[in-house]
Image 1 (cartoon, rainbow, N blue to C red):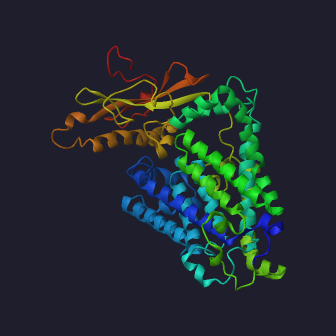
Image 2: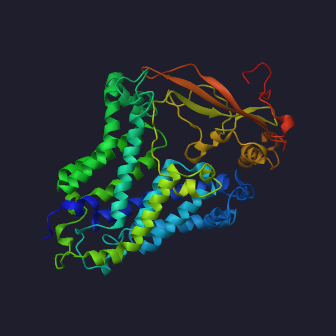
Image 3: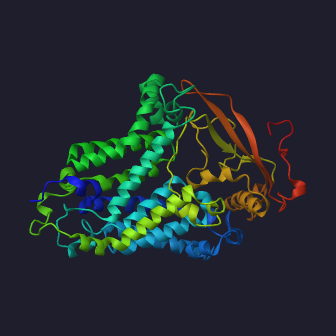
Length: 512
């Protein structure tokens, strides 16, 4: 029978079965993310897209070019091959086959994919970056893996390694940074005294579930609930660590379930957050106590290997086994401290890899949402008709989308959410970026085929629309801002003499 769970080993370490759940769930989330990336290869990663290599590489240093394997070629076949390799590696993680190779290669290739287009570097990618990095230092194949049969130890064994310590410290820092950012919001959006509206009142509007929740709790309920999020984030991991130290499974399970419940709530009430919330839950697997498989019905007591004794390691053996990994992790952590506190502005630019490799801040959703935004792009076709290029619709609708629950880039979700925020790009960068919408429209509507010439896109305006968040699920009148005017027949939209804030006149006397 296994010894009782608790103590410093439980607080700083983990067990093989919890790490197996971490590996499987992380692999599944990674697989989902990578499969979804195939649709973005052409617009965002290939030489035919919005950031060809001839524009990226001159702005990158030699280390960047060496580390970014996805920068070696901009052809679709090469990119599809690399992404397919990443998919295979994710499957290897899920089934527990050659997990050391799979984790190392997955981390390197995911970093490379992110470097290929840092415009698309979301907080989801930061999660994958760090969770994959620390997975390299965990015994991922210790339980519930194809390779697990070669081991002769108890799945319930609790052990300490540099990987377990670092990953728990990362999760502790992650939630403290997120919570403290909300706590120190100068506008006090996460307090009971938030004016005019508390943060949850402004965020819980984006989905059908959000509107149901708003109806059940009302403005008062959401105001009372708002501060609890701050303290839950700041103190969730200390509570889980103390529960592990004192051997209280109930406290640990309650904390893990509570935080996962918060993330599930985010997924149901905010658009484009399902995968992010799921990955956030994955991180909590490292806190699960010994015997978790039997506790949740994932394993049975009979499956545990009772014929072997729990492993005992002396200090010298532990240092010999884990010393190299401890040095690598320490260097990585020190690099993050250097980047955040001591690096110069030049080192923080996207010319170098440091902003992608070492950035370790998690203070998102800091204040209340003051307004919601969405985009439309009225375009003029050769036959004189007006279409919305952004939503790929035959009609231009200036009204707030989504039954009163709009969000950024409603018409194009996923990685397209970054596109409107690249409006400051000028010169050849801007020309390639905005011209892609022209080429995409023409290709999807087959304008080069006989009979489709009238569908050719001649020019378009790209607008960002905003509406202020008001009490009781209300929004202000919509206001619009012209982001860019583009002539698809010209290659000099950004020539100095042609730069202008004037709107292209699509319809005389019309709103445009």
